[in-house]
Length: 482
Image (spheres, rainbow, N blue to C red):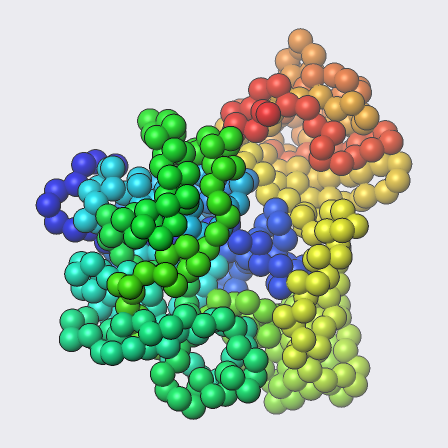
C-alpha cells in the first residue's frame, strides 16, 4: 500500500472467519461456508471479491482472515480473471468477533491510505444477486459516510424472518437517500416478525457497513475503549513490512471478543441506514441454499445423484453416492460421502446442534472433509481404519510440505504421477511414478514437488494413532511451526 492523496478512497474490507455451522456437513471448521460452491460453481468468497472489485475498481481489497484460511483464499482470488494482485491480507491468530477485526483493518487503512478513506465492510459468506442495486446502495452509503455517519445496509424484508436481526428506520436524511437508525433489534419471534413486516419501518440487518476509518476509530474509542486500546496495542506491535500482515497472537488474544454491532453501532448517535433490495441473503441454512436451485414439478431440487419416488418439496445434494428418497416431504438430504444429514426443511436452523454434539464428542467430522485443503495442495482420505489410514496426496508445483516427524505412525509413499523430491533423515532423493519409499516412526521427512505439474501419491499410514496432531514440525515455509 502507498500513502494516500487527498481524495477519500472506498476500500472493501472482507471479513472471512465464520464457521457456518448450520451448513454442516458441507461447511466445516477446516473448510467453512465462504469456500462452499454454489449452483454456478463459484464460492461465496469468490463472489464477494468480485463484488468488491465491481464497486471499488482498482482500490486495494483487504481480507481479514486466519492463517488456516489464508492460502486457500489467496488461491481462490488468484484464480479469478479480475484479480489484479491488489488484494491484501490481515491474518488473525484466533477469532475475536467483528469489532477487533474491523478496528485493525481501519488502523491499517488509516496508516497506509489516510483516515478519510472509507471502509466498505462485507462478510465473505453473504450472497448479493443484484449487483446494480448494490452499487447504487454503496454510492448512497459512501455519501453519508463522507459526512461522518456510520452506515449500515438494511434489506427490505420479503417475509417475517426470525433468523435475522432488524433495524428500525428513523427520520429521513436529505443526503444519500438514507435514514437515521432509530433502533437495532434482536432476532424476533414469529409474531413480532410479522408486526415488523407490516409496519414498513423495520429492515433486515445485513451485517455490512460503510464508514470513514477516522470516524469509526473515534467512535470505537468513545463507546468501546477497551476494544480500541487492545486493537491499537496489537497494531503497534505488528510487523507491517511482511506480506501478509500477521497479528501477534499474545496481544491479539487480549482483544475483547465482541461484535461491531454491540461495541459501536448500537451505542453511537451518528448511525444511518441505507435501505435497498439487492437480492441479499446470508445463506444461513440449508433452506436458504435450497432456494437458490430450480425445482421440478414436485418441488424437489436435486444436485448430484438422486432418485425421487413419491417425494415432494425436498432438497437433495449428493456428490458421489446415489440417494433414493421414497414417500417423503419437506426434507433436506445432504450426503458428502463421510457424513449424511437428513433434516426437516423447516428445522434447518437446528443443524448447528449437530455440530455442537460432534464437537463434544471430538469427532473429526466437525473439522475435516474427506478431502482436506492444505497450503501445498490437498489430501483425500481413502480409508480410515483402526490399523491403517490411506490418503491420496496432491502436491502443487513448487510446493513443499513441512519438515516433520511422527511419534506414533510410520508412512509408506507411492508416487502415481509426477516427480517427488523426498528428504528422509539426512538423505534426499527423487521418486518417479510407480516408485515408493518407507518412513519409519520418529524419522525426519519432507516431501517436495520440484516440477511444473501436480504430484499425486498414495500415503499409507500404519501404527496405533493417525490424528493430525501427531505431526511435529521443525521447518515450514507456511509458518505452521509452533
